[in-house]
Length: 314
Image (cartoon, rainbow, N blue to C red; front, side, top):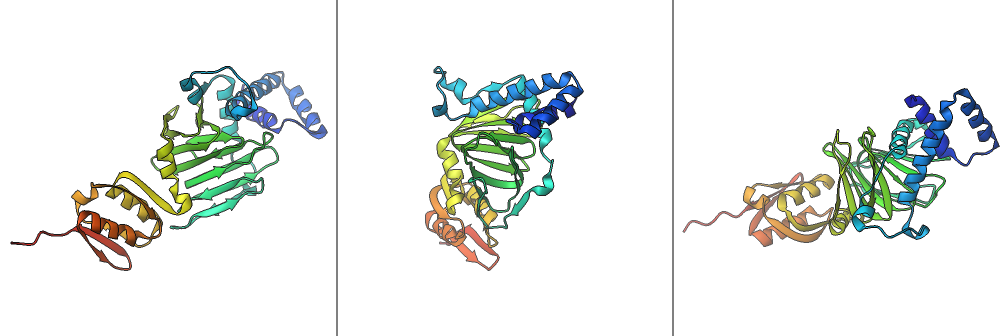
């Protein structure tokens, strides 16, 4: 069966239930080729598997499973075929999308028409297309956190290039960088899969993350609720550090501020610290380093340079 037929089947599955006009159209499509019926069944079966996996636990009663099986589960067969088909649907009617970009230092809260909310991090770009049968987000670069309004009739799908995410009513972040894509769940459950669909879908729950690298069939999955919370402190305009290196902290500040922090001492760059800082106050962070590590700070409109104090000659 061709990719074109599988993509068409996925679109019909996502449009279910159909109005009378849609029923007539699908009947005509099914009559074109005996293989269309099988493609539609595979797409609907795959969609059902995904919905069952990511539906809130309270919505259904099921036998107890070992936690490892619940937290990391692969959907094979029809689910993979559906992943490939949904991937092919992106780009259709792209001109109808709303494009949003944030500048350096800008963090934007974007309410969506379906009741969902997107929090968009600094230096990010995404497109939003709320169609009748699917809610599609294309993350071009950067990071966004989504609080998804529940709507079983319209799945919420995020395309981050090498990885895709599907949710119903949940909250999660997606970060797309040159090094890969990281999906982190803060509430509920989502399905993730590689865009090339060479592997199966992976289900991750609240407190878990999935890290995708180019060419990998499946992501690296881990559980780190506290680290996820710290990593998303930007939503409140903060940088949360827990035994982070100074160089790592500086890199975070420099993503948001035009006045760049510069560490002149490599020993200081590798020092570790704990703290909660305001994103837009790199000077306060520099002052903390000066106090904690006996460093000196030199400030210009463009830079804040930090170095260890030189020992006085005796």
